[in-house]
Length: 272
Image (tube, rainbow, N blue to C red; front, side, top):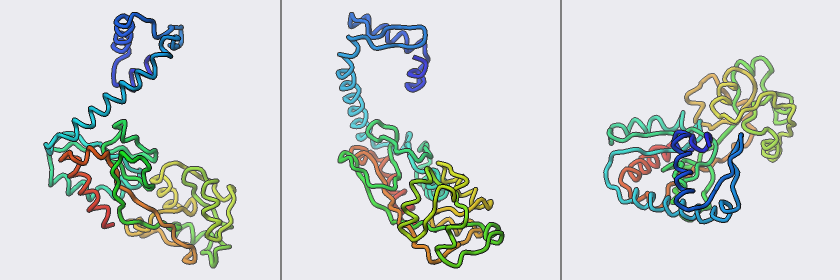
């Protein structure tokens, strides 16, 4: 109950009263209460699909109503990877602040995909094309990623003269290193998990570890402009193309404030 209350932004006593009131109104017991948890009763199980349909309908009403709003004020929630949010979005946000100073912008910096249909975000910046037909997506200019290492690290271990030389060096893994082995092998670099002494799900931490000489990392080429201490350790390595998509719910495109933020992000990041 406490976890559910946190997810809903309520207090535990308030949620308990609401559940009790629902049970009383329906005349059924929905949960068996134990000392450690709540368990759905058979009645609760049978009604669950109906409750989900109600929740989906309420969510659709909220999206449709938001789409009708034409005020350039209020709250806009943007989801983006932490590297995109940190290094690509600030210049756009500066322009947005001048264009619509009354907007409240909230940014979720995460590598997890936000569910736009469930309003986990109004706008998302993704690196894969969405498959959901209820979403509106615009492809921005592709970027490329390359290998980067600090000059300090390369001074210490020596600069690779070939792709094979890379196999002797340390790498900083982003997410699960095993997922990167096939990508590297397709470009002529045969690594093993032993090459990845450090790994993290955070792209910004990957950048910092690379900067501080922990090994070689795969990073967007644009990063080099901000960090001159980084260099490409092997020019023979084929760059990795990265798609960038700006996504929102179709009905939210009719909302003036969502449209304004969407268009400015498309213009600003699309020129990167």
